[in-house]
Length: 423
Image (cartoon, rainbow, N blue to C red; front, side, top):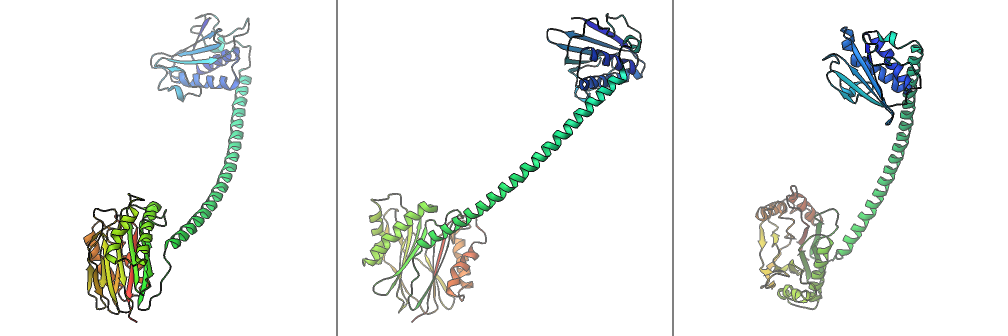
């Protein structure tokens, strides 16, 4: 392994020497051109100031690596960064720039510049490099290599751009297909939810002297039902029975609990059980099958002929009665809900409705949307007054809309309105 050195006083001499040694070690023309430019740029400040630069190179045949070192006087390299050179340097100090390149051994008998260390010290590299090659031809070869590389990069860029455009087109088409599929799924899902919700609603009833309407709104859009359910039917004696249930939880799981409660209440009511006994009896029936059921219940019986009203409660929010003249009052019936300690109702609350009176039954999602049930009950009276003269079928939805202008606590909401018209 032999180290060779050459002292250069001009940029032309330096580039000629670098080009010669690069050709001697069969560097690729593009690599050779980058090395020539890098050496000229690194030594430019020193050479322009008239300060000599030493070029040193060593070839390691074991590793096949050519090490090129450019030495300048202290501070001669100027502010050169390794990555900023056309050929990134392996190391840069204030006095040296070092490149390590894969290379071939020089051919036997080659007359490279500076064959013996120091033999050309102080001489211009243009003389020491010898005249056995055409520097202009080599420079042209390097230029052609750089142009070819640029052309190859341009072609590759064009190919990648075309592939990207084709890929983007395919991705866009896929997005369109996915969006169409998603719309189809949303439509089918919505239809299924509507059908499920309709299936859970009891059929409308007709009772001369009463107008009934209901509004239901789940806590989330991903589930059509929750724990809030209602049931209404006409008993054999002609009175109308209404059940309002609010089971613990949300979604379809709580719906199952609420359905169990409404079915048990309907069975007991049709069997003729007294109104005040139904809540406690329902708890006894359901407890062996599902001990996790917890639900508040409000039961109402109305005689369409006379306006007679009976209410039994199981921990549920009280019904709101609005008289035709605007007087409003909550009908507080006492009792404990299903799954609560000592479940059951006390003596039913009785009231008589006059023609034009409005009875509003609801779940706590209507009055607790702002996390303050007392404030919610006050607002409910105001909303009910506002819509007292509206058609009965519009009242529950309009009241719910007014109550839910601000929702701090989303919950399933049920509002059921009964207007006594008299026969």
